[in-house]
Amino acid sequence: MTLHVGSPKSGTTYLQTTLWNNKDRLSEAGVLLPGRRKREHDVLAFAVRGDRRARPTARRLLEEIRDWPGPVLVSSEWLCVPSDRQLGRFLAQLGEVDVDVVFTARRFAASVPAAWSQALKSGHAAELEDFIRDMDYGDAQWSWRTIDPAVALQGWRRHLPAERIHVVTVPRPGAPREELWHRFAAACRVPGAEAFPGDGVKSNESLTAEGARLLQLLGPELRSALQVDDVKQPFARWWIRQYFSRDLVLPHPGHPIGLAGPELELLRERSERTVTHLGDAGYDVVGELADLLDVTVDERAVRPRDVDDAALLGITTTVIPQMLARLATEHEAVKEQRARARRQRRQLRRAAAGTGPAPAGQRARERARPERWTEPGGGRTPRWLRGTRRRLGPVKRRVLHGADALGRRLGGRHPR
Image (cartoon, rainbow, N blue to C red; front, top):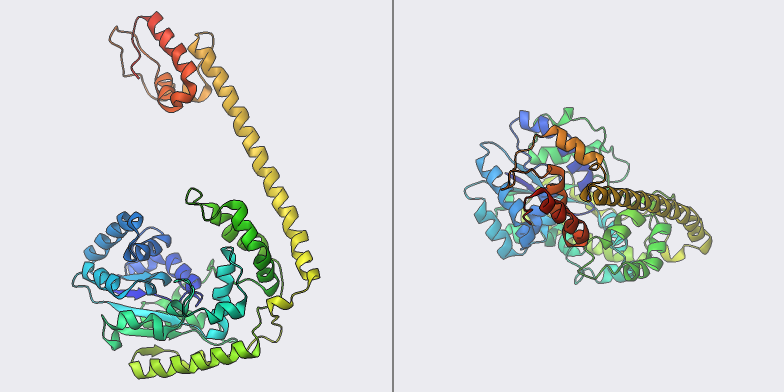
């Protein structure tokens, strides 16, 4: 069994999309990609970390893994987050399965700004230099614990021999995009990977400097307005991370995120220590460790704090009309739903009073399925009325009283 355990922002979306687009090819080659969709592998990682809500999915995946007679491949960048104890318990659940771990490592000059970009998409507003300084103590998802292979692989090294831990280096800028896939497939021993089509493969792109600056300014206000930290608002974060950041801000053109001299020096020193550690640890390296030492920055890069107001205005003049268009579309959809509900309520009241036909949808279902339930007195209650009574609940109690009166006139009794 091969576990691809990280790191975030190292081409994982590209690699995982390639795997899932070729799930049938993998199965034909005898390799299991367990589950029905990519998200389930992340849910498995959450279960390893102790999330009880993820346990049913995790149990199903583990049963599928244990029942498969051949190689298995699981990919989630969040499998580098669990503690030593959690990893040990997870490996024990796998039983006698032989496990190899694959970690895709990207040069820090690229992965750290990308990680900061992801934090901004959740509505946080730290400056880039503060984010880098606090990565030793930061959020579990966006810290050296997940970005730096020298730290992220320590827990796995306590449970597995070094030769079963593979570090795949992300090629430096300018290399063909397929090179990362070829390195990854070699580490995971994916059969026939060269023939896997790359059509429809997605990447999780980072924000531009302009987009990052806008989210720095608006993120906290958006979190407050949407009550993101309220446990009763579980989907509020989606509006910032997916709709505002990805759908609206991300497509807007701009400059790459730039780094200043002190920040680059810090990342250079960290890269050198990491490369030395990986060489001494004896891990299997696919690619070149020198790929991790590169700290060059795109000559077009701009530090987000240096973005001028005109650039921010350019984004907002594009984003605000799109938001208003979405609001108008949602408003029209709600109006239509309310109008449909009013029509159905009128039809239900007329039908309950015996002065009108059942709603069209109920009549169609009535014709499709024969009546089977008979009241004690021999009369029959239409199936559409029974189904309606079950769904409407106390809010439509007035309609239910009318239905009860109708039932009494028919000589039967309508059970609730």
